[in-house]
Image 1 (tube, rainbow, N blue to C red):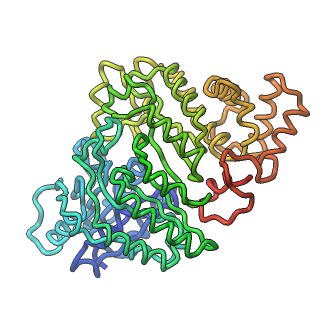
Image 2 (cartoon, rainbow, N blue to C red):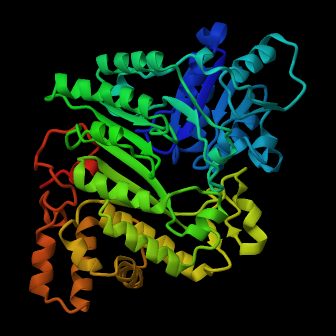
Image 3 (spheres, rainbow, N blue to C red):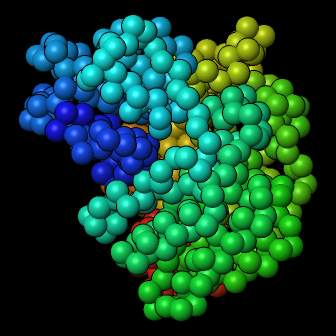
Length: 499
């Protein structure tokens, strides 16, 4: 083995699609290449020891916003104990503003952008000459039909234990300035027949959970329908062996043909991630986000009322021009549409994104270290931003968990944002914690909060007892589910299937 491909994943259940693409496209060097994944939080010395156990000549690291800090330490130690090992970096975190980064200074080479053909070429030059003179290499984007698909490289263990990431296309035609896809010119599809053949092979090997990473799954409706039909055929042929698919949808593009296909999926088989990000038209214009808010709201309403799809809808706090009041208005509007989960994100400055052009006018202040979360801006000061950060964390624990389905509407009343912000402030004041809050303690704190709002202890305890937090599986916002229904859905989503 000469070349080792590696990265630090956020969780063990995440399998790196990018590394598998590189391995699939190594050509003559594939036999000399091996893939080994780690998880953030592992000891640096153990990672380096396990890397060197393979005696590699080249180590390629996938660098992302969530692993750059830890991988920097790994590369620093690796170059100290084995300076002759050639380190090649790639991935979105090192593809922009490269010269500023400590990890880039430590490495031998960096590939920016697409690495499918550039990485094997670079490895060949390192191993066989002529030695590359430049440190930073711009990745070459090949025609999509020339990229070898990587799905056969998911192991049986991956299929059994991990989320399988797949993509029918790369890129995005939209220009939202907070997103790295703003730098893309368009979306490029893979040949559909080849892609579906790979999905068929994965399914035959036992894969039942597919997470599509396409930015715009419903951009081309004909393609969307063919992919959904693939999963519908599996569900119809084997209803006792369900399959689960996750897609990211453009919120204001849901024609009748797509609705008809979506409506055929049973509960527990389909999940949509929908990026609203902001309902404020002025903010949308400022960050170059084109979105018909009325159509988006109507489509979300249709999905919650007329389909069994599990719905994750995203909002971002901290965008330039978004005040707390305007964000609250958008949050309440989204809550009224009844999605299963509102993913409350805090703006991050991804390297290379155009959002930075608003820094001076809107006073954007970001953390200097990954994940570069916004700390304050012209309209939201630092203490208020920290309150929003805590709101997001507690919302995930209480609302998105699916464990407080009966209690949540009572807790939120007729002002979801305002009531939960008040609860969030109180919870932090009484626990001084945002993590490691045990479920029993959290349930008790929710009951105490309800009592501070005028509910009797008996009523509060009875309400909590009716929820999952009270030791059973009841309580959900999902319509049409059945308690105990067999599902391929991940456990968190499966909670919402309870009657």
